Image (cartoon, rainbow, N blue to C red; front, side, top):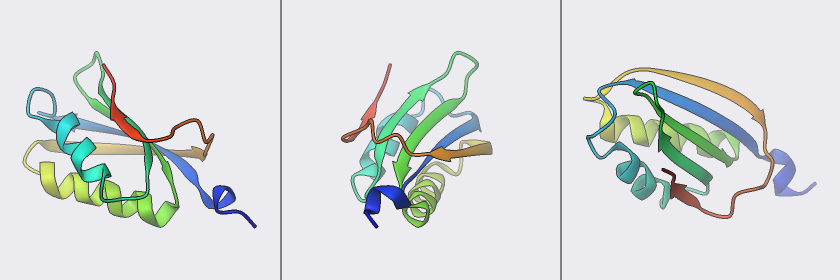
Length: 95
């Protein structure tokens, strides 16, 4: 069985004081230490969205690392899980 079949997609929405504090750039830097692909972006409603694909355990570690780095700004997070699409080749900031 290929490793691609073990990958999933997490869409994570962080709320709180998460825009204008370096959240996207910190997330991109944190992502370099994990086997994840996808993107981070600000949403119009003031939240930050991460869409990431990888093994479930790796995604959990990645999101936890982001939360550890940005804990003073996060009030809440919402996670939705879906099958991975394989459309991403790296992790980037989107605008």
